[in-house]
Length: 240
Image (cartoon, rainbow, N blue to C red; front, side, top):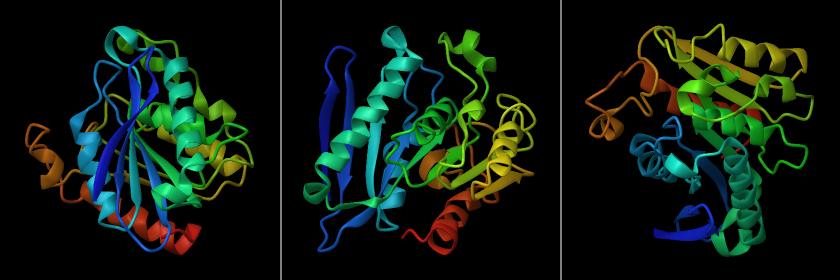
């Protein structure tokens, strides 16, 4: 595997980390948007997630969007668009099938992923959203000005897989996931939702690969989101 980092915008230190498997055929691609409330990009959501998808024959990409002093919701959205454009422009070199390119986001990164998937010119063919922020209820806490991304859902929104936990008090189901899935249903967008009875917010893969950098937070039941999403992509969306 080749791992390299590409600068996207030097003015805000944003970049794209590429995890490229050497292959004879173009592979599906997954663009990863970590959470972290714009204070940091959570390690549990970045390389470990990229490598897990690499084992499922995806080319993986992690977007390092501006955080801390440079945090800005609009700038982060622009960086994600730049990342997709770079991947599309270098698809042959990166050995990625842009017709099977999607996005995954966690928490605040889930809001950004949802926002990008709803852009008119989005290149995302599918979206995976983990315990996503949907409405701007956490703006004061995160120190950004965001938006209610459920308002942008349309019949052009790509198929979407969403998961969360009943115990999540950061992005409660009724305020976030329910609002978004209701919008998907109204617009006849293919989707699947899993609201796990165990687990919590910010649990990432919920397995031993992320628990080692996530205060030993482990939940075998909630960790099922990954194989379920892969199965959904293969059986329902036709990707994989």
